[in-house]
Amino acid sequence: MSPARPLVVAANRDEFYARASEAARYWNDSPHVFGGRDLVAGGTWLAVSTAGRFAAVTNYTDFLRTENPPASRGDLARGFLEGDAAASAYAAGIDGARYQGFNLLAFDGVDLVYACNRTGEMRVLQPGVYGIANSPLDDVWPKSARGIARLKSIAATASTDDLLKVLREESADYGPDGTEPESARSATPAFLRGKDYGTRASTAVIFDCGHIAFAEQQFGSMGKPGARTIETIRIRHAPARAIAEDGASLGGRKAAR
Image (cartoon, rainbow, N blue to C red; front, side, top):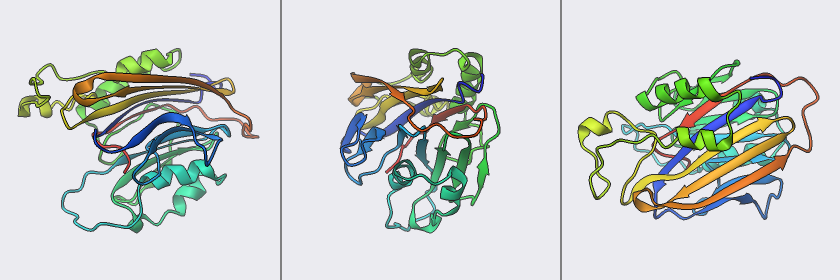
């Protein structure tokens, strides 16, 4: 990649189909933000802004914790995009105890920052390709390892269509009702096809030459394709200093709540 293409993201949102959400669009209450919206809590799992900012969050799987903190994880991404704080400062100011487990990515046009409230880690990511699921960033799940390998080979020239194809990797062992045997579940495919829970949306984001290419493919129960949203967003307030080269591949079995 070159500094003109500082961020490339491929992300699946896995969620219960019954949870109300809105497909990617400009938000009425924050018209500079573009992305999907969780209609239950009001936050987002992934979105960008015309100021050249990006944020995404995944759940952190921790079945041993039983507390129910008051704040929604989707507010983390929304708060960053609606504000103008540097990514590092925003992440450092998060009170992690107010949220269930999360992994957060925040890009301010200069730095791509990763934060996790379960490990307490926060760091600026160096140029490279990363994969995030429902555990710490450095954990390697089979699907994230495969996604990283594929993204490395195409990130410099990929289109949003190319990235969406990366996200369609799935198990060949699904039953007619969307269930899968343990052997398939352990393989952890990137795309989940189920009756009540599965991949709700695949999203591709490319920051390139002062614009953001954004594509979102919606899916219904059993992986039935829905609407596709394609948008080119002009970055209106580019950062004053040079942008570092970064790449990210993001995927998780559950997205923001």
